[in-house]
Image (cartoon, rainbow, N blue to C red):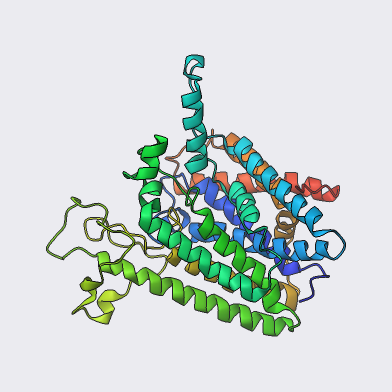
Amino acid sequence: MSQQERVVSLDQFRGYCVLGMFVVNFLGGMTSTHHLLRHNNTHFSLADSIMPAFILISGFSYRMTFVKRLLSQEPSSVRNRYFWRSIGLIFLSLMLFGFGNKILTYSELTWENLARFVVLVVKADMWEVLAIIGACQILLLPFIAWSARRRIVLFFGLGISHLLLSWWFNWDFVYGRPNALDQFFGTNGKRAWDGGFFGLLAWSEIMLLGTLLPDLGNRLSRESAVVRLATLGAILMIAGYSASCLSRLYDKPESVADTSAEVASDPVLPPWEKAKGRKLVKLLAEPPLVPPPSIDLREPNYWAMDKRIVSQSFVYFSAGWAVLLYGLFVMICDIRNWTFAPLTTFGQNPLAAYIIHHVVEVSLLALFPKDSSAWWASVGMLLSIAITYKFVRFLEDRQLYLRL
């Protein structure tokens, strides 16, 4: 797949990710929504598949455009451009979604409270998808032009770093449990989501995999590229599911059914002794998309496919899912030449689509409360998508595209 031509599958897949975010963001807060369309911190759901796919394909675009710019511009100029673009994404995210906490009165506007305000934002509140993409681009900026082999080594280095930090303190840091870092900053009890600050290491793994996709299909026919994508996707999914099987070592004895120990004494380092004497079937985790037992039967732990901590099992399985799905888009769009116009519209102007959808969603939720029935919530979702599409199509007709 030549990098010089426009990659139709890339636009279509990006459009799919954007459309998926519209669905999940609108329905995620509804009480009637099925668990497959909800985010959770216990297992992999369809809702959980969208954000990793978007970050993966952002990595694809990042690498492809970065290398292309290096052909005609000075490396320092290219890096500066992407650095400030990434800063712009972070600040745009903050302006769209807010700071998550606030200083209520002028009398509370002290240096101490301002410092705590900033720490809370950096720890947890700023990490929506746009900010995560921006921060991951900055983190990977020194390495984006590296060879594929060196980026693969970096991929494993990021994963090991996230695992070790989670074992040291980050599990407790994300889940608001007692830890030295929260005690130092005075943020005890504050939970994070989507990995918080240190989750950027894990999200950067997925983006880094995305940077490898152009290398994967370079100088190959599209049919051969699909085979490679399918193979890589399958390997990653198997690795992710295998890692999630370690969560079975946190099963409580069948005679015990209580919540007295909601989290294991060591949720990251598995109690290997619990594997002794158990049949293989008793060591296999539930299939993806299937919820695990409640905490009265299994202690929460790092090895579940957990989007809140961005565990390594989640990184591998969600990235593999996205790679496999992208291979399907290559087959459908680049080989069969089938496209879906709304995906093109959303995929070629994703930033505008995301901003508009947020404004539309916030407005429409006034008519669609959280306890809406499934059919009424679906009406709201479809209406939100239709209105957003009309606005973005209006921009497309006038060749107006929002770029940072």
